[in-house]
Amino acid sequence: MAVLFKKVTRTSDPSDKNSPKKTYPQITYQYSNSATLDEIAKEISGNAGVSEGETISVLKDFRTQLKKQLIAGRTVNIDGLGTFYLAAQSKGTDRPEDFSATDITGLRICFRANSEIRLSTNISTRTDGLVLKDVDRINTDSNDPDSGDHGEDPTV
Image (cartoon, rainbow, N blue to C red; front, side, top):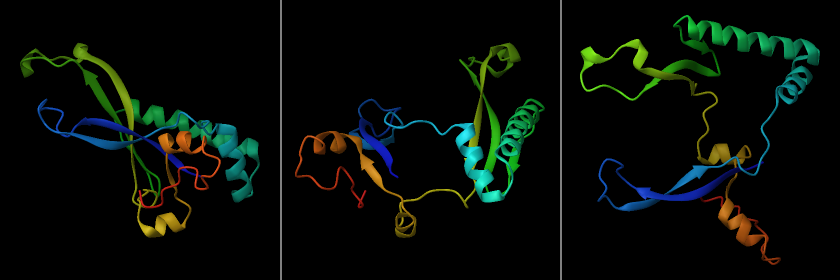
């Protein structure tokens, strides 16, 4: 398993157009398939000793309750997983007194992972199987039959 990234170049300070450009990693999911509810349920049911159907039902109920609690104005903190919360989107107004609820153009569900599941690039995480692969190197290396690492760069 590998986390794929591509390199993007942008200014180091978005508010200053004259700031120097730097290259940053951007995680990409372009080359992978999303994990489905059924796949997750199958894995959980195998580990938890409950049926796949029961697991799917519980996960669907969780989704329903998550939405219900967020709409009620609450954050949802799942121990060991993280916190779900809403963020509002709008174009903004020039003066605070001119802003009203009708100026809100959308809501996003955000998630902040608890420390137990956060990933880092330290040595212990890498020994657990974290591999970062540069998709540009993967594409380049796939044209070179002598290349054995296929874009893996354990120092990234």
